[in-house]
Structures are given as C-alpha cells and as structure tokens.
Length: 240
Image (cartoon, rainbow, N blue to C red; front, side, top):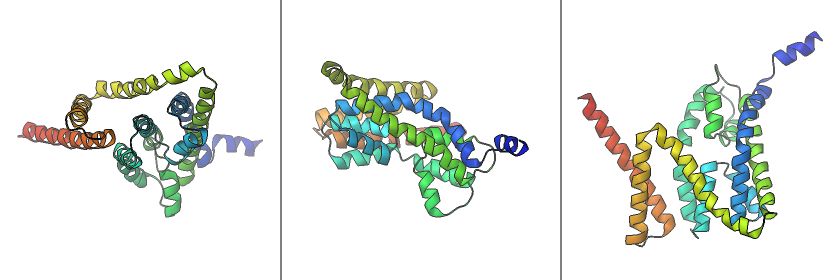
C-alpha cells in the first residue's frame, strides 16, 4: 500500500504531461468537431480530413486552408499562407528548447511537431525544467483529441441533411470572427493589422485582379511588416 501511495503522489513526468493535457484535449473537442463538419462542407473526404489534422495539427491554419480550398486556391498558395500563419512557432519552439531537458534531436523533433498555442502555454507556465516525457504526454493527448474529433465531426457532418451541410460553410467565417474578436479586444495593434490586411486584400483582388491565394499571402506580409514598422517607430519616438 505504501508503494502504491508513493506512485500516486509522485506520478511520472509522462503521466503529469497527460494530466496537464486533459483540459487542452477537452477544449479541442468542439473546435475539432467543427473543423470536421466544415471539411465535409467543402467536399473533403474522411481520409483527407484526417490527414490534414494528422500532418498539419494547427487549428487556425487548417480553418484558413478550408477557406482557401473553398475558393479554389492552389496548393502552393495554401502552403505559403499556412507557413506565414504558423511562423510564430519558431519563437515558441526556441523558448521551449531552453526549458525542456537536453535530449536527442529526433525526440525534440517529435514533440516540437505538437507545439500549439495551448500546449506551449501549459508547458511554458510549468515551473522548473521539463522532461521530454512530460512534453510527449502533454502533446499525445492533445494531438489525439484533435485528430479523433476531426474525424468524428466529418462523420457526423455526413449524417446531417444536405441543406444543413451546405449552410455549414457560413460557420467558417463565424469561426474566423470568433478567433479574431478576442485578439482585437486585447490589442489595438491586432485591429490595425486586421483592417490593413483586409484593405490590401480587397485592393489586390478587386482592383489588381490578383488570384485569391496570392492576395491573401501578399496582404498578410505587407500588413505585418508595415504595422510592425509603424509600432517600432512609435516606440522610438516615445523614448526620445
């Protein structure tokens, strides 16, 4: 009995990672279900939906990819846009590299694939140095939830009436609004970035007749660089 109580009070790093990831897994359920439903609405089959969640594992990027697929955007533009949206992962990976124990590169590559905003937040706020097995536990349960419920969402979507399936495409835009508004409330910079990107995108598509995919990529890059430059200049002026 004494040995059993010690094991319970001192769980392994892997088990602690699993426990820490339970809340993330629960939070992923509705978002992944919605993704599966929307993937069905843009005519992705079950295997394509699962493959996207398995190999991409990035909520915002996957939703954006669905939108671009619905617009008939080419593969290269979708990949480039996904890269731009997820470029922040370089910073998150660098931060966690300093916090997690030094280990073999293939192990680091394994858990770095599973770094999302949520898993990063949990890992980064955890006190002390982290074990590789903790990261694997945290990511395995989060990743499994995302992939499994993406598939369930697609299956459920297939059983819905055709009219309701067609109307699900509207939810895609509602989801983007839901992701954007909380960020806009926290930072005025996000408001400027969203408004500038929207204006450039409209200019490129309707005036310059640029392809939708390239319009999104170029508008995002110009807006991000431009707003960051303005913010930098503003900080320099305020220090003078």
